[in-house]
Length: 377
Ligand code: GLA
Image (tube, rainbow, N blue to C red):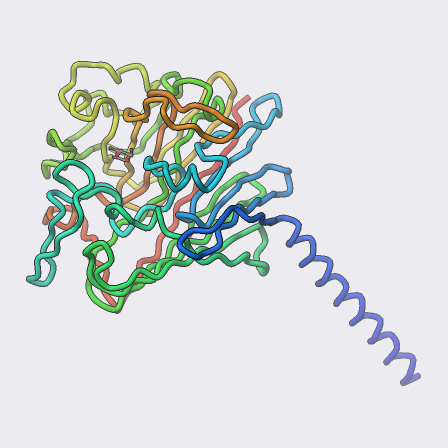
């Protein structure tokens, strides 16, 4: 009798062990990796994450980037809707931040200077008189450590980067982590955690460009945008915020109800002239679950953006000029992609009235942004 129950127990344990093994090997199949070259002695990989629907995203640890998002249109036909390059050479030479994580400070810092705790810091100037997106060798151009996560419900990868004290002029030894999770509901969840050993400033975002018709298939002027923002931050001629928080009411920046990107983009509004189109930070109401959405009437594809960040930059690819050759040899022409970069407001270290971007050793920066893809019939 005793032997029989021991035998039964052994069988139950064997079945459970089998189930665990099966589950983890299935998990492995959901994330595959291939060599993508080396940079500064570090190996770069291209990762493919497949969810239960069979929809796919590709990521690379170069710049912790989103390289491809392959999701269905209303007829179930999959297409890649984000900008990327075929190879590492493209990523290294491309300077338009396709799909990359941008840090330490996304967007602009006026004249590349800020003062923190009475000390003035000087950054490299890579955008006229200003510093943009963390400087010349910001986090977008670094090889991040990668770890495929196996104890998760969905395919997921953690990217980690250590940024030494005074890198690109910023104080503090900083460790940044971004976990990408690709859910069965076609959501890319980006969970950020950043720590420092000294007071510093931080503004981190993902700079993916999207074209819901399919990347490299013409402009995005017919895409319909909603941004749950009652105000935006107007800029000067170098795209630095003036400090004003201006209501969107009665302006071409009012996207609280849907408007096509092209509907008002060429209005003689001075802000649109300065931005060469939309290239502005919106002050999110943060009141509802979805902070912004873009719908493509042609394919039925929709992108929803959810974030806990106070702002979002709508950038309509005004600097794209067709010289970038993307995945599959696709050419990205003027205004053929839009970005919705979740962020703190630009130039916050120099703007006392904006929410603070100071990161201190006693409190890590924890934040989450989701890109959710779906179709409207
Ligand atoms: C951001 C900026 C734009 C431009 C792009 C990259 O979105 O706001 O002005 O620099 O990055 O080309």
